[in-house]
Structures are given as structure tokens and as C-alpha cells.
Length: 138
Image 1 (cartoon, one colour):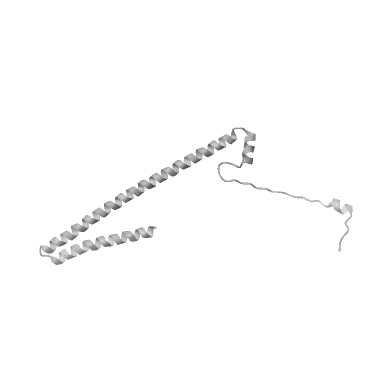
Image 2 (tube, rainbow, N blue to C red):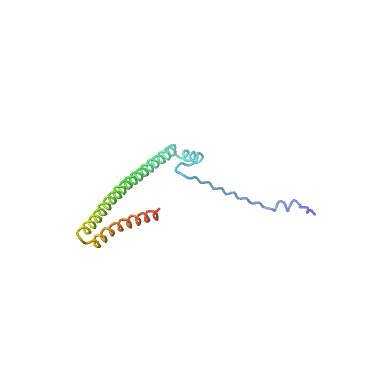
């Protein structure tokens, strides 16, 4: 079924349309069409935008280099401390085992055994505990 519409009804109908557009960009340099609009306002704007982006890039690179150098120095420092700790632990272990042996030879085998065994057990437990802490950090 179709309806016949006369001219008066067609003329009384109003149509409104709205168009909304959104554009966005990421980064310091706008897309070429926007950059040309900046250039229309002032010819130096486009060059100034590029100079600003280059300066920002250089700054970011210098910060990344500083961060990397700091991290490398920290790794070297930690490695040195770790080696020194191992050396001191070895010295303490040898010392306690030696003192335990001397005490056993001098007539106190129980005390010597406790001292020597305590030194070895202490070193082994510290070693195992530090390895467990490092695995938990990762």
C-alpha cells in the first residue's frame, strides 16, 4: 500500500544533518595536513616544531644513555660486593674449621667438632638462603 503525498507535505518537512569528525595524532610532529595549517599561520612554525621534536629526541636519548650507564655501574658494584662476600665467607669457613681442628687436637674433640661443624653449617645455610632470596626476586 502506498500513500500519495502532495507538494505541501513535501515542502513542510525539514531535514537536518550534522557531521562530526575527530582527528588525533600521537607524537611531537603533526600530520602533513595539520603541519601545513601551522605553516599558513606563520612560516617558521613548521621548522620550530621539527626543531622541538629533534631536541626532545636528543634529550630522551641522553636520559636513556645515563640510565643504561647507571645500571651497568650498579651491576659492576653488586658483582664486586658479591665476590667480596664470597671471599670473606670462605675465610670465615676455613678459620672455623681450623679452630675446630685445633681444639680437637688440644684435647677438646666435642668442642672442636661443634665449632668446626657450626662453621660449615653456617656457611652452607647462608649460601642456600641467599640463593633462595635471589630466586624469589626474579
